[in-house]
Image (cartoon, rainbow, N blue to C red; front, top):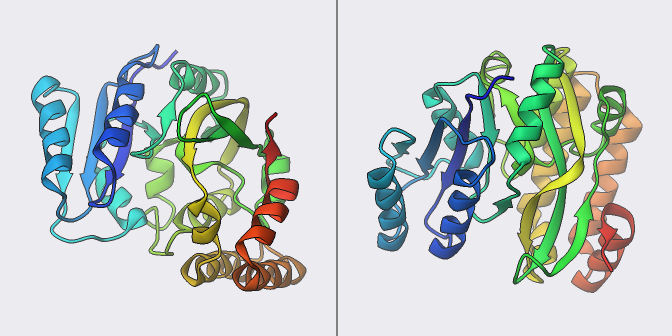
Length: 277
């Protein structure tokens, strides 16, 4: 089994240092340790966040690679800069406020060993409020490639924070991530899938994703809705999403933007998430 992989993270000034530390520690505690952790500083950080980065770079100089950017580029473009610095072909994405379970990367590496044609491997997620033991919902995505293709016509077929992918396959897809605000992930995944790259999701929740009551308010922002529509419009231009898919996304995103938060929460929990008891 291939055991060398890089972890790719991007941090910006509004992240909380304590969450950032939890995220890094969860990657250092993987049963198969990362050979490299790349941290992109997406623009100037606060002193506390800089101190976190400096501390880990000092403790693990051979593991941590820091990529400082002069200004904030946004997640997609920042990840592209970090991806160029990854020295392994397999790269695990990680957000700076979430928590990976200890066997996450081990199980993903195993999938790449079993299937050499695999390009992207994700997992399910559990979403929690306040503390990791307070899991409220899960996001379940399709497992096999054909189901992933069909699902991706309207929605992201992977949970971005969970994916491990092949560096060269991403970079060969128009240079990787594009600047589509808040939806750079689904845009990348669709472009990779339409080029014939193979995807899979492991049927386990291997990342704990931090959420709060403000999550639904952020989802109904105009920037979020516009980014989603643009991503599916680009998919439609490629001939992947059908006209009915594009219309569905436009109508649902406009409805989401106009709906009160309580209604959005009700619909999301009922149709887009699996509720935890």
